[in-house]
Amino acid sequence: MNAGRYAAGGAGLVIMESTKVERRGCGTVGDLGIWDDAHVPGLKRCVDFSRQHNAVSGIQLGHSGRKARRFRPWEGGAPLKNSPDVWDWEGWELISSSAINSPETDPAPRALTRAEIPEVVERWGQGARRAHEAGFEVLDIHMTQGYLIHQFLSPFSNVRNDEYGGSELNRMRFAIEVAESVRAHWPASKPLFVRFSVEDDTGWGPDQSVALAKVLKPKGVDVIDCSSGGMRGSPVVSVGPVTYGCRMPNGCERTPAS
Image (tube, rainbow, N blue to C red; front, top):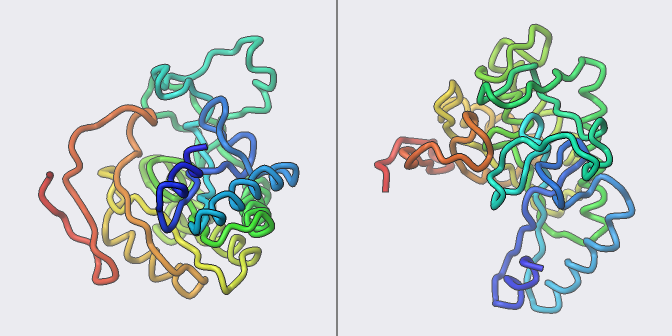
């Protein structure tokens, strides 16, 4: 267990990466899940192990959206092919804010209906409840790098014409509702992080990130965890050197590539 290795190695805070809030959200075979109460005992074992080594345990909740159902990174990261090895192919559905694929060679996702969105939001809340029951002390909401919440935020991937698309505030609505649902199930005494792609080069940038951060703060978000990029291409495709960065809380600014 990598998280346990970091804890045993002396890390003060160990955050388990993008743990999926529903089956459809799994990026690839073997993704860590928190969409069922049956997952809690195994996650609790991880927390207990880290605690024994004096490390604080955190967990990141994520959903791959249209970037789901792919080969593992070391296998190339391409979309999986339907085969008998994937027993729940139809259940492992690609969903997104809109029926738009990127790159064009990827299969197109299905746009979530207006009626489905509250159900997906509640998945995040229930994931937060399970994370608390497992004993995690920090929670991070994954809103970055071209995954489902980012797909709602970006005008590149979100062309909806209802209250979840169009204007900047409408495109933020899904992210805001997820944060509200998570905080409703996550104790006020425990810190809540949110991870942004502060700039993705497809219409979402520092100004939008700062605006969303200001909306999320009174919802109970304590820390903005800054990342970048991710909207174009498949999850494991590099698009070149990072040419932007972020400083919070004083706002974001471009920085030279390193």
